[in-house]
Amino acid sequence: MIIVLQKGTTPQQAEEFGKQLEKSYNVKVNLWEGVQSSVLGLIGDTTSIDIDAINAQSLVANVQRVQEPYKKANRKFHPDNTVITLDNGTKIGDGSLAIMAGPCSIEGEEQICGIAQSVKDSGAVILRGGAFKPRTSPYSFQGLKGEGLKYMEEAKKRTGLPIVTEIMAAEHLPLFENVDIIQVGARNMQNFELLKELGKIDKPILLKRGLACTIEELLMSAEYIMAGGNERVMFCERGIRTYETYTRNTLDISAIPALKKLSHLPVIIDPSHAAGKAWMVESLSMAAVAAGADGLIIEVHNDPAHALSDGAQSLTPQQFDATAKKLFALKNALNSINE
Image 1 (cartoon, rainbow, N blue to C red):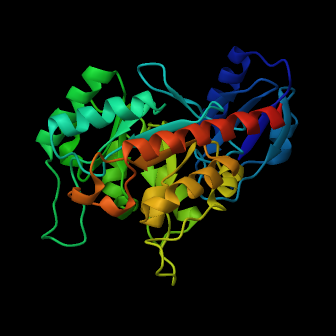
Image 2: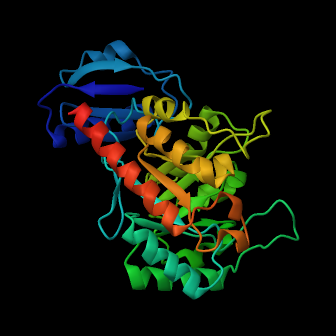
Image 3: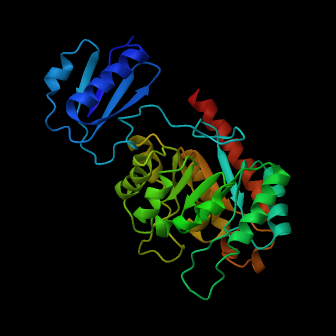
């Protein structure tokens, strides 16, 4: 249930009213203070609440029930876009284009540090890289794990770029203390015990859509994290599995406006995993920006032909530089149109 308060309601009045509702109806109340009005989101069993009685309160402008099973991730509970701010001040979801770039797998200290400097020079604001690698085959390269994280932290020290990397299990959390954004991969999107643990920490989470998961299932996975107290969540559309075999996956561009309508959380697009082909990354990235994505996560490798994983979908630093220039030009043009 959502209660929109009258314009002019003070934060103190809203807070006191929320506490009164919690006590009277045994629900949890979230207060969102917007530019035009304040909204109280009631989470729990609201079936016994008399809407007419709530509407009769002088502070209340209107009341509406929410049928969707996701509450905290729901835009109805939080009308304004969520902006996630990293420790260095980098913002995601504020209207700018946040590009995350780097290799699929961390292969060594000089490799990740060299790529980090290169993508930073081209405009990337976050370094991506895999230390723990979930692979379909048990015989494929599984990543450098803790050692890879140390190399990534060194790249962060040298360049100042925040880092995003994937977690595989909750017991690995102590290793991620210096990681700025924790990525939940597509295969773990519905690892609910992991999501619950990530809900207990105060660190941004990049939640990737599962290979065959619906948009509502993605929203519910975000709800698991947010219900635990961590509301710094971003969605990542990385392509879904369809009958088409020409591309690695099928990038669902329609997920961008859909998620933007249903939720207030930032939306990131991964064109590299979607296509599986480096030559398609630029086109898919531009389509994502045009559709309203808040950011992109792009794979970049200094020597794709000899990469230990996903070389076929990785851009070279030179290709990434050319792509980034077009993406920022497109974003600037769109901003001008929307002004």
